Length: 249
Ligand code: ASP
Ligand code: MG
Image 1 (cartoon, helix red, strand yellow):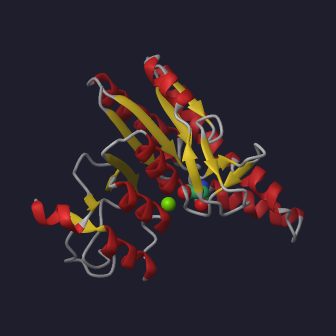
Image 2 (cartoon, helix red, strand yellow):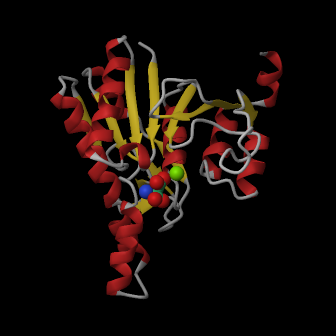
């Protein structure tokens, strides 16, 4: 059975209605005979709100406790999405990064993902469930929760897609693709069908905050095509892939 990996960003799971919309989308894909793994960000601005709370308690947070705190946003959205799926008759389970076997370096707040142990994930997929995984976090060698840098859920999704040997990682966001120029500034901006990893990294270095830069690096190392698209439309977005494969198409 083909494995489909989707990632939904904060705006795409920002309200209960939007979570239910994602659940319907995911259920349809599963019912077409696919195994589906979903990585989620925290709802809306939940992570910023957690940081705001923290700042009201201390100006010098301990990095370990920072990770304990900010990783909780994703747990909320993952559990709610699993419940929304179950509610419409789609078997589903949510897993934290650690439960899903996402192992990181022993560095609080900005670790890299070292490897993904697939045992639990594969067991749940085999049992016919959609697996919803919290983005942005994993565990270190001590079993502590570690986060991987702001915006890191994209990288969680690509790393999990790579471990599962999926060819494509669909990243659903609030823009419907990559544009030649910013469509909010230049109205005639055109959506690109393809863009290479290198060009996408360059855009990221120029300040485009569409994707976490490490997700692009990880995709280029493992040859994963990132399909950046909108969770509100059915249209195709932009494929981020190797320059070599773009030439072939
Ligand atoms: N929720 C985290 C953040 O706001 C991670 C992410 O959204 O990718 O940075
Ligand atoms: Mg993001």
